[in-house]
Length: 105
Image 1: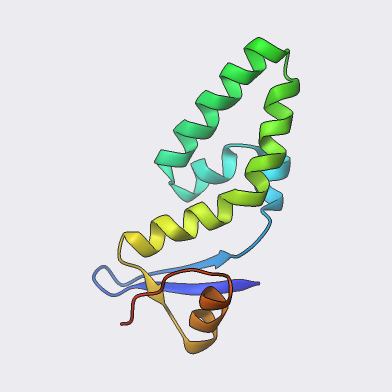
Image 2: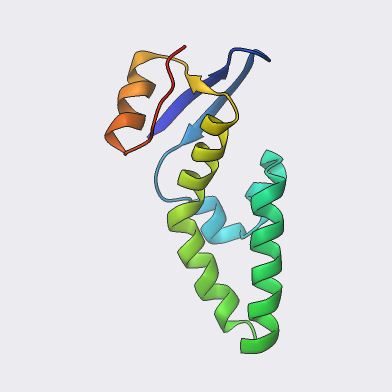
């Protein structure tokens, strides 16, 4: 399921997937890099490197699977905190059904 988010101050529009992140599952930190999500890029990259060193890569793979379940929720939460609001009523209902706190326009 995808939701539309608008930032009324900057007039930016983002369409974001809610739920499991297949891109993080397959490509690790690269989705955060391409989205410009510098906070989670650095966190994922540092944890991946630390786990890869100490577990010969196995821990990094397990961490990637875990992050695939949580990354989209973390990304949407950060967008909502930075001023984005749902772009339409369907997006607002979808976010509320998934437990997000939504600001009104």
